[in-house]
Image (cartoon, rainbow, N blue to C red):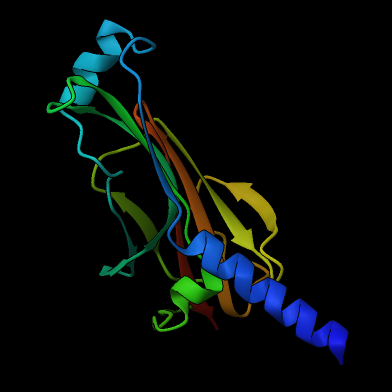
Length: 165
Protein backbone atom coordinates (compact mmCIF):
# COMPACT_ATOMS: atom_id res chain seq x y z
CA UNK A 1 0.00 0.00 0.00
CA UNK A 2 2.77 2.46 0.96
CA UNK A 3 4.61 1.64 -2.27
CA UNK A 4 1.54 2.50 -4.36
CA UNK A 5 1.07 5.82 -2.55
CA UNK A 6 4.75 6.64 -3.00
CA UNK A 7 4.64 5.81 -6.75
CA UNK A 8 1.48 7.88 -7.22
CA UNK A 9 3.03 10.79 -5.34
CA UNK A 10 6.18 10.64 -7.46
CA UNK A 11 4.17 10.53 -10.70
CA UNK A 12 2.17 13.61 -9.66
CA UNK A 13 5.37 15.42 -8.68
CA UNK A 14 7.01 14.71 -12.08
CA UNK A 15 3.92 15.86 -13.98
CA UNK A 16 3.75 19.10 -12.00
CA UNK A 17 7.47 19.75 -12.47
CA UNK A 18 7.27 19.27 -16.23
CA UNK A 19 4.00 21.11 -16.84
CA UNK A 20 5.34 24.59 -17.37
CA UNK A 21 9.09 24.44 -17.30
CA UNK A 22 10.36 27.36 -19.34
CA UNK A 23 13.84 28.76 -19.34
CA UNK A 24 14.99 31.86 -21.13
CA UNK A 25 18.65 32.34 -21.85
CA UNK A 26 20.10 35.50 -23.31
CA UNK A 27 23.50 35.38 -24.93
CA UNK A 28 24.42 37.65 -27.82
CA UNK A 29 28.13 36.80 -27.92
CA UNK A 30 27.64 33.21 -29.12
CA UNK A 31 25.38 34.08 -32.07
CA UNK A 32 26.88 34.78 -35.45
CA UNK A 33 25.81 37.85 -37.45
CA UNK A 34 24.03 35.69 -40.08
CA UNK A 35 22.06 33.83 -37.44
CA UNK A 36 21.14 37.09 -35.71
CA UNK A 37 19.88 38.58 -38.98
CA UNK A 38 17.74 35.50 -39.69
CA UNK A 39 16.37 35.49 -36.16
CA UNK A 40 15.33 39.15 -36.28
CA UNK A 41 12.46 38.04 -38.52
CA UNK A 42 11.60 35.06 -36.33
CA UNK A 43 8.72 34.85 -33.88
CA UNK A 44 9.19 33.77 -30.27
CA UNK A 45 7.62 30.35 -30.91
CA UNK A 46 8.01 27.67 -33.57
CA UNK A 47 5.54 27.65 -36.48
CA UNK A 48 2.28 25.76 -36.03
CA UNK A 49 1.54 22.40 -37.65
CA UNK A 50 -1.80 21.19 -38.99
CA UNK A 51 -2.58 17.80 -40.41
CA UNK A 52 -4.93 17.35 -43.32
CA UNK A 53 -6.95 14.13 -43.31
CA UNK A 54 -8.67 13.63 -46.67
CA UNK A 55 -8.78 17.42 -47.12
CA UNK A 56 -10.08 18.27 -43.62
CA UNK A 57 -7.65 20.21 -41.39
CA UNK A 58 -6.86 19.43 -37.74
CA UNK A 59 -4.45 21.23 -35.40
CA UNK A 60 -1.70 19.34 -33.63
CA UNK A 61 -0.55 19.97 -30.05
CA UNK A 62 2.94 21.36 -29.47
CA UNK A 63 4.82 19.08 -27.10
CA UNK A 64 7.87 21.10 -26.17
CA UNK A 65 10.42 23.10 -28.10
CA UNK A 66 13.78 24.86 -28.07
CA UNK A 67 13.62 28.12 -30.02
CA UNK A 68 15.91 31.12 -30.54
CA UNK A 69 14.84 34.58 -31.68
CA UNK A 70 16.14 38.14 -31.64
CA UNK A 71 14.90 40.12 -28.62
CA UNK A 72 14.86 43.78 -29.71
CA UNK A 73 14.47 45.10 -26.17
CA UNK A 74 17.58 43.28 -24.96
CA UNK A 75 19.35 43.64 -28.34
CA UNK A 76 20.37 39.99 -28.04
CA UNK A 77 19.48 36.48 -29.12
CA UNK A 78 17.05 34.83 -26.70
CA UNK A 79 16.51 31.10 -26.42
CA UNK A 80 13.42 29.53 -24.93
CA UNK A 81 13.27 25.89 -23.86
CA UNK A 82 9.74 24.72 -23.09
CA UNK A 83 8.65 21.31 -21.90
CA UNK A 84 5.11 20.09 -21.47
CA UNK A 85 3.17 17.12 -20.16
CA UNK A 86 3.03 13.76 -21.92
CA UNK A 87 1.38 13.24 -25.29
CA UNK A 88 -1.66 11.42 -23.88
CA UNK A 89 -2.41 14.29 -21.48
CA UNK A 90 -2.17 16.82 -24.32
CA UNK A 91 -4.49 14.79 -26.52
CA UNK A 92 -7.01 13.48 -23.98
CA UNK A 93 -9.69 16.08 -24.83
CA UNK A 94 -9.08 16.04 -28.59
CA UNK A 95 -11.11 13.93 -30.96
CA UNK A 96 -8.93 11.66 -33.09
CA UNK A 97 -9.96 11.81 -36.76
CA UNK A 98 -11.06 8.45 -38.17
CA UNK A 99 -8.79 7.16 -40.95
CA UNK A 100 -8.35 4.00 -42.97
CA UNK A 101 -5.67 2.61 -45.27
CA UNK A 102 -6.92 4.78 -48.16
CA UNK A 103 -6.82 8.06 -46.20
CA UNK A 104 -4.55 10.82 -47.45
CA UNK A 105 -2.70 12.50 -44.59
CA UNK A 106 -0.59 15.60 -45.15
CA UNK A 107 1.55 17.63 -42.74
CA UNK A 108 1.03 21.38 -43.23
CA UNK A 109 3.67 23.48 -41.47
CA UNK A 110 3.06 27.22 -41.26
CA UNK A 111 6.75 27.51 -42.24
CA UNK A 112 8.46 24.54 -43.87
CA UNK A 113 11.19 23.08 -41.60
CA UNK A 114 14.69 22.13 -42.72
CA UNK A 115 13.99 18.53 -41.65
CA UNK A 116 11.27 16.58 -39.90
CA UNK A 117 10.45 13.03 -38.90
CA UNK A 118 7.25 11.29 -37.87
CA UNK A 119 7.31 8.77 -35.03
CA UNK A 120 4.58 6.39 -33.90
CA UNK A 121 4.44 6.44 -30.10
CA UNK A 122 3.54 3.26 -28.26
CA UNK A 123 1.79 3.13 -24.91
CA UNK A 124 5.03 3.89 -23.08
CA UNK A 125 5.94 6.90 -25.29
CA UNK A 126 8.72 5.09 -27.09
CA UNK A 127 8.99 5.78 -30.78
CA UNK A 128 8.52 2.72 -32.85
CA UNK A 129 9.41 4.07 -36.31
CA UNK A 130 11.00 7.13 -37.81
CA UNK A 131 9.46 8.20 -41.12
CA UNK A 132 8.91 11.37 -43.07
CA UNK A 133 5.24 10.52 -43.54
CA UNK A 134 2.34 9.24 -41.45
CA UNK A 135 2.27 5.42 -41.54
CA UNK A 136 -1.15 3.81 -41.08
CA UNK A 137 -0.18 0.29 -42.12
CA UNK A 138 -0.19 -2.21 -39.27
CA UNK A 139 -2.05 0.15 -36.91
CA UNK A 140 -5.54 -0.06 -35.46
CA UNK A 141 -7.44 2.01 -32.94
CA UNK A 142 -6.22 5.27 -31.46
CA UNK A 143 -2.61 5.80 -32.54
CA UNK A 144 -0.45 8.67 -31.29
CA UNK A 145 2.07 10.28 -33.63
CA UNK A 146 4.90 12.67 -32.82
CA UNK A 147 6.51 14.99 -35.35
CA UNK A 148 9.99 16.35 -34.62
CA UNK A 149 10.71 19.36 -36.84
CA UNK A 150 13.91 21.39 -37.05
CA UNK A 151 14.44 24.92 -38.34
CA UNK A 152 17.50 27.15 -38.16
CA UNK A 153 16.00 28.73 -35.01
CA UNK A 154 15.46 25.45 -33.18
CA UNK A 155 13.42 22.27 -32.82
CA UNK A 156 9.77 21.63 -31.95
CA UNK A 157 7.77 18.51 -31.15
CA UNK A 158 4.12 18.13 -32.14
CA UNK A 159 1.68 15.33 -31.29
CA UNK A 160 -1.63 14.21 -32.73
CA UNK A 161 -3.72 11.06 -32.72
CA UNK A 162 -5.63 9.21 -35.40
CA UNK A 163 -8.33 6.57 -35.00
CA UNK A 164 -7.13 3.93 -37.47
CA UNK A 165 -9.96 1.68 -38.66
